[in-house]
Image (cartoon, rainbow, N blue to C red; front, side):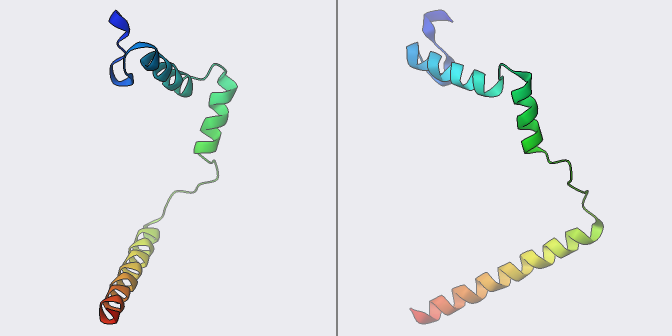
Length: 79
């Protein structure tokens, strides 16, 4: 790199260290490590969502919103 300029990571030895940390985090030396990380990130037993699940999720979000509105109303009355 020209003049030890590592762009986003900075210049000089600090930039180099940050660049190498990011590189090793994103590209581990062992393929076993990367396979283990992929297994942790994407569990194999996750089932695809069904149509009813979306409606159930929306209903739960609506319920949480109503609880939040009620709590804000109670808090405004207490002040």
